[in-house]
Structure formats: structure tokens, C-alpha cells
Length: 404
Picture 1 (spheres, helix red, strand yellow):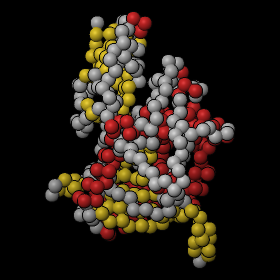
Picture 2: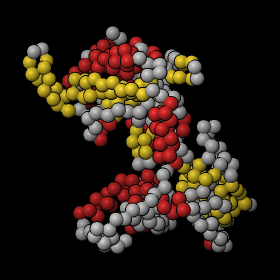
Picture 3: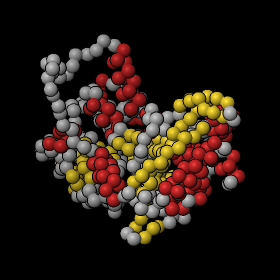
Picture 4: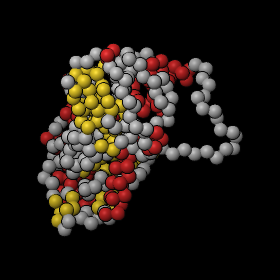
């Protein structure tokens, strides 16, 4: 019995997807729930699982094809054996965009390394590696990102291999084109929309993080032992922002036509950088969660985002966003609002600087913080006072516990 493999039902906010890569070719045996292909939307990468055991008979679309919900992608013959599979015609030639995206074909073997996750595949292709030569440690022989990173480290320690492509002559002015991923296209679109539809302005302040650092040093071991997660800085900033949002509700609001929508809940977006680009998973009802729950949720989202397994529901909504450029060394920046939200807080690098404290010069761990906001509904007074509230909460964390 033959079965059609179709594009899964896409969420209402997603109109189509791009078939990034097939993991099987016609004639290959497939197992139930085995990932056959990756579909990239403008938000996440979706897997296409096999509905049954059998043999892949035919591919209906090629890599790089834009597909929609319910479209037939392939046909499998249930219960058939791979040895009896008749060779099926290869799919149509890949699109130019798909060909440009792949810097070199990655050979895949039958020992489980044909089931590469999107992040692993990208790493393999960018470094022109043969997955079959890399020792794998994942389940069912899967190749993990750490396997590839470790292999690259060993290569760096060894003598450099001959380049796969001849180096251009000295002084040559070369260039190459790479198609944008769907996520990168969506990020570009949203950034342009935010700049063109909102009246953006940025205000700055600085925070002395001595009290937060002391609190973390005092309780980090007990916190991790009892709650099973490390006590980071992000939970402090989430809690401090919620205090500011409660005092100045318009910062937690959004514009809908000629109306201001005041959100009476606090769904905080936390920007996470991945190989595919920036995504913003949402910590919902963050005001009702403790420091441990917030740290756990952010950590889980970061792992899922970097593994390419985060869901669209995880990224939908949000009333306010926090982004941390400090992890990359940024000392100061003007973040762009994540529309339709009306404000975003930018964290930056912690740097020890001489400060005047009680008339004396002291070395303190300082961070510049920024709020970019939509000046159509948020005045400078609210934005600056929101930032001052965040600063006061972080410099005296007990305020957040006492609600003052």
C-alpha cells in the first residue's frame, strides 16, 4: 500500500515553508516517525516524519521548493523492503537559491548520520565536512553538534588539510552570493516594518550590579542544588522589568489602529541568538513565576532554539522584550522594538569602572541599559522612569521581593 507524505498543517500565521533538505532518497528504507525532510518557515524548522515503515518510492518536490499545507512531498510504500525497491527518478534540479545556500554537498552514510539536525547540517556544510568521517555519539548513531565541534577542534590541532577549492590569486576581487534563510528574511522584514511604522527613540541609564553579583555569589550553590538550575542575571532583569511595567503600564501596551491596547499580563520575550538568526521565545505570565522557574524556562527555550526544535507557539505573542548584546561584548546599543510591542530593554556588557560611592571612588561592576520605545504612545517621562525603576530594583534586589 502506498502512502502520500504531505506538508503538515502550518499555523495560521505561516502561509508557506521551504523544503530545506531531504534526508532520504528514492529506494531507501524508512522507519515510522523517522524524519524524512526539514521544512523551514519564517519562524522555525519543522520536521516531516514518516507515518509508517516502508520504502521511499518517489520524491514529488526538490530541495529549495516553496510548499504549502497539505501539499504532497513524497510517496512511500508501506511494509516494503529496501532491497526490492525499484530505483525512482531523481527529483527535479534544485533551485538556484537552494544550490547557492549549500556551500558543498555533505556525504551521508547509513549508520544514522543521514539524520542530521538543521544546526548540525549547517555546520557540516559550512565547513565542507564528510559526516561519515566524524565519530558520532548521539542516539541511534546520530551526529550531534558537539561531535562536529570536537572534530573541527581536532582538525585545527592537526596539520591543515589541502583546501577543497583552489585559493584565488593574490589581489583577486572575489565575491559569492548566498540566499537568505526564511528566518533571516522575516527578521529583515520585521526590522524594516518597525523602523517605518513606529516613532522609535532610545534612552540610556547605567546600573551598578554589585548587589546582584553579591546575591548570586551568596546563594548560587544552594539555588542550583535545590532548584536544579543556575542563578543567572536574566531572571533579575525579567523581574526588574516587570516591576517597571507594573508602574508604567503603557510600556507594556501596544498600538492597534487608533487604540492603545493595555495588556494586563506580562509575557516577556527573551531574545536568543541561534545559527539561523535571532528568535524571541516568550516567558508567559512571568510575574507569577519565581527566579528558578524563569531561569529554567529561558534555558530550555535556548536549547530548543539552537537545536532547531522550538515551536511556533513558543515564539508567538509577548508584551515586552529583553535582549542581551553584552554576551557578544556590546557596551552600548539601540535595540529595535519587536513590533507590535512598544518597547524593548537592551542589556550590555558588565564592565568594572571607577565610580563615586558615598564620596569615595570605588571600582564597581557597571552595565549600560537602554530602552527603545514607540514615542507615539510612550512619552520620554514614562520611558526614563521605567528605566530608573529597573535600575533601582537591580541595585537593591530586595525591593523586588518586598514590592516597593
